[in-house]
Amino acid sequence: MLEVRNLCVQLKQQDRQRTLVEGISFSLGEDQCLGILGESGSGKSVTCSAINGLLGEHFSVSGSVRLRQKELLTLPANERRQLRGSDIAMIMQSPMTAFNPLFTIGNQAVETIRQHHTVDKKAALELICNAMSRVNLKDPQSLLKLYPHELSGGMLQRIMVSFALVLEPKIIIADEPTTAIDYISQREVVRELQLVRETFGTSFIFVSHDLSLISHIADDVLVMNNGQMVDYGSAQSVFSHPESEHTRYLIDMRMKLINRFQSVMGS
Ligand SMILES: Nc1ncnc2c1ncn2[C@@H]1O[C@H](COP(=O)(O)OP(=O)(O)OP(=O)(O)O)[C@@H](O)[C@H]1O
Image 1: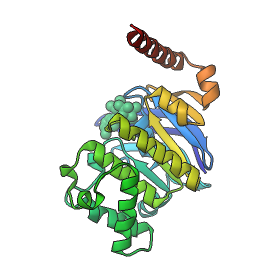
Image 2 (image 1 turned 90 degrees about the vertical axis):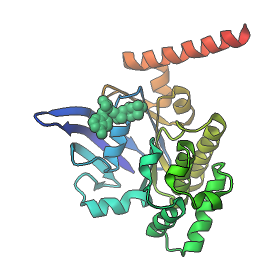
Image 3 (image 1 turned 60 degrees about the vertical axis):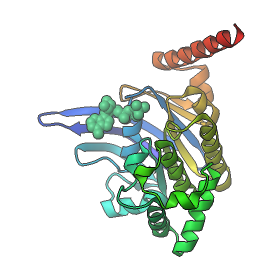
């Protein structure tokens, strides 16, 4: 489905280039979930944005990103845009920047859905309302009348998940899709994303710094540190026999946290 080879992202600065990400390679099969794990600033979001062609002109991206044998990095911008949503949908970490502040959520939903499905406005609204209810958003009709700034980050994030549920893309890149959401809704969102995978065979790239979440949902895991890939393989092998010091460190930190929690709960 998706084949990424030696992906490298540089930021063009006045007199030099700063490398943000280098040497990222992985394959994502149909109905497969790749977890990208790493601490803050390790390059997870830049990697996802590069794959989806969302980095601006200050960045240079090299390597290869092939979607069903089609090279995406050299694709003209309009063809790339067409793939977004229908082939690859992204649930972004900062939901505020994902929406246009000048239009209501309902307008943006209808516009986005009708770009990819031949349905009228009423049917598009029904689809999005239905998807919003599935991710625990109450009274979707009223929410659709609001502008992005009138909603919390967590609500916008869940609305983004609803867009992805309606568009039924082949691949969903979920970049920390639960960061701005309370614990109960996090579980709803993860459950819904898993249901999408089971129902439509959607492939996922699931980005998180939460090791337990990744170990729970990912088939394969790629661990990043300082813009580089330090471990890659099946979740089972990466977590039981990590190759890098850094992955071992992340696992140790997680174990310490669990032990501390158990001792606090026990005392
Ligand atoms: N728009 C940008 N301009 C300049 N540098 C950037 C930009 N976006 C990201 N970076 C830099 O690229 C590096 C990787 O950032 P990235 O956002 O990909 O990390 P991350 O692993 O997703 O972190 P987090 O979990 O906090 O989101 C960081 O050093 C960051 O400062």
